[in-house]
Length: 181
Image (cartoon, rainbow, N blue to C red; front, side, top):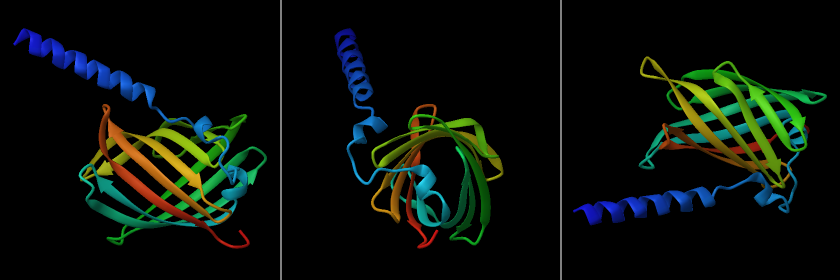
């Protein structure tokens, strides 16, 4: 039994090391086109359609978002209005700041501390902790959010939600920038 436990521990450690070595970085997408400029894409009105899936893949919620976006220098405001399939509504207002080459920070009322993000080529990786109300309780969950610019109008977004390192589910979004902003 002791040998089996030792082998299982070594196998688990090897899996953990392998997982650490496969982390995606925005720089992995540096050569991808079209190049994402957050100040250009998130300027004007952007519509989005999305869904939340639990860890089994079941769609729990569907929603639409209307985003009114504007920038003043290196500071941007993304004013988001969510409408969920059950008729409920939610508002989130992001304030983004460019803090370096390809680097951004952001705040919103339901974000704990500061979000941090980085662009690379057509991709943007955004990490933050969100206070998420569920059944009368509020949980703080981690978001690892990846956005990929497909063309001047369309962006795809996939975010993995986790708590204590355990995957809770995914949020998938399709963004379309309105013509003329």
